[in-house]
Image 1: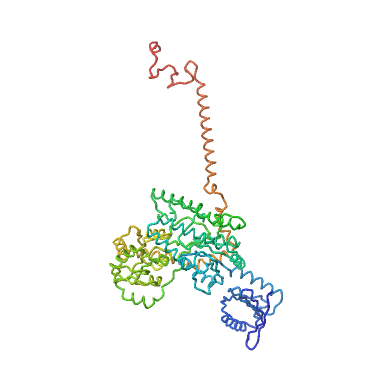
Image 2 (image 1 turned 90 degrees about the vertical axis):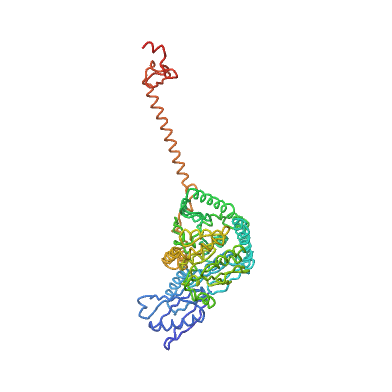
Length: 630
């Protein structure tokens, strides 16, 4: 039962009675003698809201023409669900109608959103925290589902729901660094990635198996769940909660499950390292990579989650493949400036570059290092937060190549410094990367090809030399090189001289910077910042209850219909029938022509060149008896 509490606010020596309903989003309805009284009351309420930490967006709506002279207005606020509202004592029917209107509006705009981020890769969490801040500004309530022991800084922009996972921050980082070490040691990258995916499914088993966590999530009554496809457990959790969900991909990934046409003749498959212009052998390789990846997803990855749902008897029964395809919206961290053009669907939107922003002033330590670099500039080097320790061989090659440059170098580095480190190189464990890339004296960026880093470089128009290590690094750098913004090197074959030559080329050849600046213009020349576009589409889902009008029927038709196999069968049968009819017609015509010859002129009903059969020898000569008679 909602309780009413009487509160007053001075209005030029007068008081206006109001009732507080804490359970509803903030709405203010009052009957002030004049608009001036209304403004004073609003100022009073604004101070009270500031004291309580409430954030309001005020919208004024006149109630009726009859009450306009009395100064009756409605102010609606979008904020936390705990925000109260006050109203004057009004007619019961008017109050009821207003409450219903306010409730309908609040459900359309203010929502509770749960995010299931990956259990590792902190760079992915950076994106979700930025998104949560933007959602909070729109009045939405965001909850992160994270494991116990994972270090996530507190914020007013989101809440945390903990669960007993298989990793905490320390163990997750140790596990990831062990994978990187194994890759540097020569172990097949695909095996390491599949091992990571296997740990994702183990963690999903721990989450779904926690009855207390699932009950807590159900009590929250979320309006939307955001799934990072790297953490596919989000699909399962959304199904358990019975909540609509959307995909928010933090990697460079356009999965086949989206359902969009993907002609392999010009759409490169993920991890193929190909562009949209392929030779015959490259198209063969692209097809092979597609078939292998489809096999891996359908028979190795998705069945892990099917077994989890069967283990806990999750009802109604549904396949993991169907859960993936039932996503209301696909928000992909790619961009038209970076991605190759390809067919897509209406419910697929590009929101790449969430973390991009104008540069801020550099901290004193970094400003002192770059302030005298007007002539040659400086180079930024970073292999991301996920790769803390490079192999000794790679570190030596990087240090040697960088020491030969006339530019100063700022290198984010952890571990034992290389013995051949140049005097022009400064090692730091942390750097304001975005601000350094946005500095006017930045000449180049040496990176592993992480997507967030590449977007920051593209945003500021900085050319790149990339040394991809694993995951989507290769696909990202393939696009950077194809777009003319940088050069990609293979770390297994790269020499110190190769790296030095590549660095000199991107610094001295103006074409790389010009292409980077052009891509920067294309990236920025879009309606709104990527994070604002993401918030718009999330709100769009909530307003339109799942955007069924954007979903193609491709998800409803079987495979044989999608590939027109039934049409091919029908056409094949028709062609066979036509061929058979033509054959029978030919036999019939031949039979009728054969009846026109006299029996004396033919043997067995056949003639050769107008001469009845039997009058020729096998060598084509006329029989001797008949020749003599002639």
